[in-house]
Image (cartoon, rainbow, N blue to C red; front, side, top):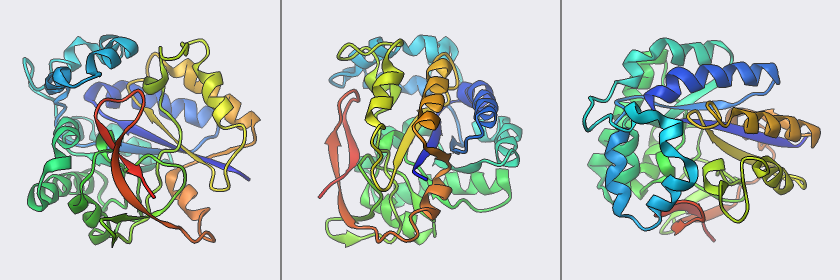
Length: 299
């Protein structure tokens, strides 16, 4: 059966408290699997205000109604309001996801800190940030993590090396077309990359005639013909776990009608056991609908 893997990025305190339980419920109702990647430290979403000077940032904010999805309080965390510690305050919710039978992994410790700075940081900064997330994950779940999905698809070569050194089964830090073994300046990193292969809702919304009413149909058109290695779709607890849940339900129904098995990232990896993964260089490039550059599957 062709597979479509679902990964859920949980960026904020509100997304963890409100979006995650709703997504668990809807996934169970559709008998779908998924992997939840958690932000495990303080919610400093308000510090993203610095991005206002980046080209395209204001356009993205206006297209996706950030206040509506995240709430005023979240947008003040880390500036006028102290950022709540997600891993400490929401540990019971995080464990309940695992106990409900879903795979869990690391998104980051501090989402804003990783997304905005990791691309240009050195080995020690990168190791320290990732170790904070690993330690908190271990504290919450009582076991070491085995999977990572980078906040904002932001990476550097030190972070990639750590995926291998920490013994992760796989990492999903990139955008691309199919699973691969990553290289960075020709250095092989022995940790499979399972890239996001489909655009996200916030990248598509209110662009090129795409609206709330037709965005699900647009994505389903992209999945009509499944590649040999299937697809990976990334959703966000703050969006699909909130006001855009009807769109997500339409996608779940559509993918099941198309004959996809909706799986976790670990199940997706297991389905690739007989596939010899090619090597691809990781490059930093822009992608339509997002600001700045992202880690991408290159040649």
